[in-house]
Length: 433
Image (cartoon, rainbow, N blue to C red; front, side):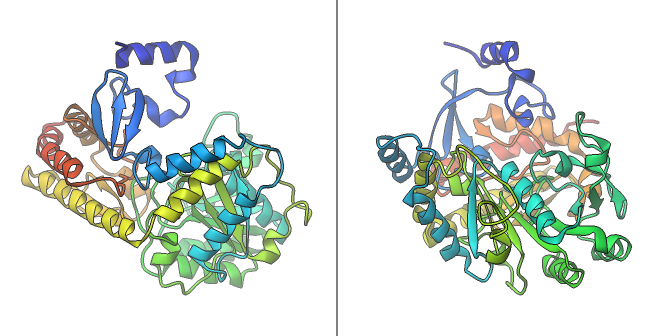
């Protein structure tokens, strides 16, 4: 039998860092990453044959749990017809209509299907620039919108600071087209537009921040941004790659008061049911600027792949109101238990929610922005993580990630999590910087 150590050693010999996405390398928690070979329902199994309750959920797509029968059946039936044709298929319209049905025509006029969330946000930025004739994009520190060059810019929490590259290989001139400001700070938004308004094409914001841990927007924040943006002739891009169709049947926008409308919305994760699929959607008059209808170019050989479409459609069709009620309830049970376990051993912490997404921050008060997220006792998370892993529970391997619960997390899986939490809390309490 192959061990996890052997699997990782083999991977490091042929893959940079031994992984194909950095967080998988356990860099922030240490130790040897688990190499998984199968998943079913709320469980994943590693190469050593050990079963773990999964709270990563493929970073969001496994809304129904792993290998849900309806999704597997849909994929198998689609695969029997062919893996892709390089041409349009009726399923593309099926998914676009399903997205519009769930969210509403007020927000969604037309949809362009792509393969990844990065591709969706990258296209949204290009489209916003094409629609406005402006160059600058405003983002919030700590928000992640994929790894395209301009969106990796991060200038910390300085107000209206022109971005510097957040990665090697990004030209400073490219990064300088992104303005990075603090999250949940409307004064920063207003000041930025006062100084740079005629040059700003769009503001892009995670509908609810969940890539620095979960930090929800303060009530009315997204609506206020929309007002400021539209007063200044710019566009609002709402990034729901992570929250879309996970936190509710219509995403985070559906949980808010719906008293504002974004111009463009990006989706991913859940809409592909675990296969590579994402989408850009928005007002028809803006979407029609995309080629071939308009002058803004975007293309993709695998866009709208029929097998991915089958998985996404089956996932959305199976994610009914009872599934969301179960996920919400299970997430509340698990997050409350985590908080109780940490409180019992005197560990300062806070738990924040964005619908059924939640995360633990090792600080007494809930963080409102990236600066406050970083000002926590993050050293407590690695022992907490490994204690859970040793007890058969797979958590996100970073304190700066959300926890994902699925509709398949039944009483047996939840009880295994609850049983593991007290030991993990003790491990966190004994950690030192």
